[in-house]
Each structure stands twice: as C-alpha cells, then as structure tokens.
Image (cartoon, rainbow, N blue to C red):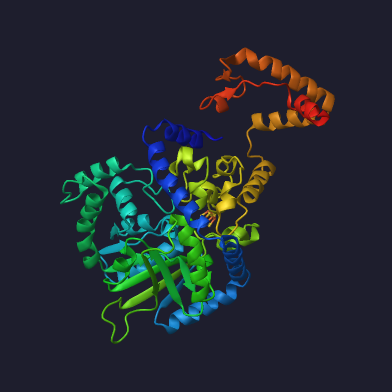
Length: 465
Ligand code: SF4
C-alpha cells in the first residue's frame, strides 16, 4: 500500500463522523434496493437484457455514434467531439465565452468531475453554480464528491446545517431536512434564472432520436437546462442506447438499483434547442461527446466496464467503501467501479492501491444491474500490477516464500503447525491485537486466536467423518 493511500485510509478511519454518515445513506440505499428487488421478480431477466443492450452498443459503437450525431443535428443540436478530457473542457469554455457567459449552472455529472470541468470553468473566470443539492453542499464545503449518486454522503445533516448557516443569505431555523432544502432552494432559485449557460451530463444518449436523457429527483436538471440561452451536454460515448424503448429498459435498472424507487421524480429527454412555438428552452443546444480513455478501455480488455450506468449500488454494498468512504480512494470514481475505472483513466502505477483495496467477496457483482464482473476485472488489474513490478518487495518476498512452501506439502504442514503454536503467545482473552509482520492487519482490527488445529488437520478430520 502506498503511503498516500495509507494516509487517506487512516484519516477516514479516524473520522468520528464519517462512518455515521456513510452508514446512514448506504444503509437506507441497501434496504430500499432490497425492497425494490423483492417486488421485482424479473430482475435477473431485466439485468440480462440491460447487459445485452449495452454490449450490443459497445460492439457497434461507431454505428450508434454516427446515428446519434445525425439525429441530434437534425433536431437542431450542435455536436462536438472530444478525444480527451482537456479537449472537452476547452470546447465547453469556448462555447461559454462565445455566449459571453458570466455565470453557468451545472446539473450533477460525474463525467464533468472526471474531466475537471469545474476547475476549467473557474480558471476561465466563469461563475459556476452547482445545482444538485448534494453538489451544492460540497461546493460550499470545497470538497470533491465522495459517492457517484450522493456526492455529499460524507457530510452528516448536522454538518450541512452548519454549512448553510455560514453560507446562505436566508438560512432560517434549519431545524429539519425540509428546512435545509428550503434554504438551498431560496439560495439557488435566482441563480437558475440568471445563468447564461446551463451544463448537464447525460444518463443516456438515444441514437434513433438524437435525444439526451437526464434523471434527477430534484428537478434541478430541468431548471439548469431550460432558462439559460445555451444548454451544453457533456457525455461519455458509452452512454448510447439504440432507442427510447432501450433507454426505458435501462432506466428501470438504474433507478431501482440506485434509490430503490421505480422511477426518478424527473426524467427528461432533451431534444435540440427551443423550436418555434415552444414557450421555453435554450436557443443553442450543444452536445460534447467525450472519449477520454473509453476506446482505450476496449483495447485493455475492459469492455465490460463500459456497461456501467453509474447507479452506485456496488459502492453501497462494498465492505471497503462502507468503512473508508469515497475520498480515501483519491479519485473521481470510488468503490468497486472506481477501483476498476481509475487505473485505466489515471494509469495503473498511480492507482495501484485501488484494485488491492478489495476483499473480492463478490457483493458488487451480485448487485450490479448490468452484471459487470467487477472482481474478475479487479483481479486482472492485480495481475498487471504484479507483472509490472508495482508490488512492494516485502509482498513479493512473502508470496515467493508462500509459493516455496506450498509446493512442498510436508514443509508447508510443518510451517503451519509452528505458526499455530506461536500465535497464542500474542493472544489475550482469545484475541490477537498485535502480530509481527501483520501490523497492517491488526492496526485496525483484532483477530480471533486460532482454535482447532491447522486448516489441513481440520480438513483431514472432516474428510474422515
Ligand atoms: S459497476 Fe454496476 S453497480 Fe457499480 S455503479 Fe456501475 S452499474 Fe452500478
């Protein structure tokens, strides 16, 4: 484990409030998802369909990109292509400058975070107003997101009240969650109406209509994209689906997996700019299609990961994420999906800790609505890290020693028996809280003293029964 990752994990584990905040949100998400799945016996059929839709699009990516572009242009949109995140940011800033934009509103988009769009807007001197409630909270706090669905998950409601008291003009009593939402609404309302440009992401890009689908529970995407003169969409090229019917099939999976609801409060298909006779809508509608490493993922054997619909279920069920939260991952995407994506986006050397920070218990794959084999992909990164020599010398020595022993069964049995006899020396009241060469393990948890002999001895006994 690198020192930087270790320090972030230690800070997360030492936080007196982080675990409470994580448990509150992920606990609710898990129980709501479980209830939704119990009421949906066709989940496995729907999941297979979702997997097949996304696989089909990825296998025919060029066809669907061209089809989407043609239909989006026909509806009046301007389509831009960005090979890298930096190019995408430059395109967005250029559109904002041409629109003489002083202020932009932004609906939550993880792609925007991935490519560094908030920073690019600030550097260009353009006021950026995050309009998703959770994004508004972390913008006030100056924090990066810690979850892909609930970016402010690391904040307790008490901390949010404190932030609003400090930063809102008219916070009121803030005695309840409803009062806090009211305070944010008053704060954001005039920003919505004054913005020159609205920037959103896309949950799905519908190839046969050229429409962009967004889902929210707050209606902030609609308020971000409708009043301003210009609407800019930034979307990863993997967001394509062939038709509206396919988008609806994916929405059923996305929303139930993310929040346990049947549908989000607001589901909007944005189709081009304002047309003659429309009461409202933007005069310009731009769509920036972003690659930023996605086609490289195909070559890296990560095509399965391009199915991801960013539902967050794998984070909510991950035993590691639930202990350390999102910031400890040090990347835009945390949890199991982030541990697979980040080495591809940032390079394996920089992100080598993330595939290792996994117990491989398989919960993430079980809940994933598009059946991504996350543990297999994580093992793939571990193998590459090993081949490229990123494992520390101590780990390589330990594995070499283990390999030496395991290939010599008699020696292995003797070494296990000696180890078993030594371990009680470090035990107190049936628990081991310090063990030489295993300080990383025992620093944060105690280990029960082994009982009943070595694994091999127990196995032999059981086989005789
Ligand atoms: S990997 Fe699967 S479970 Fe995780 S966010 Fe993506 S779609 Fe959801």
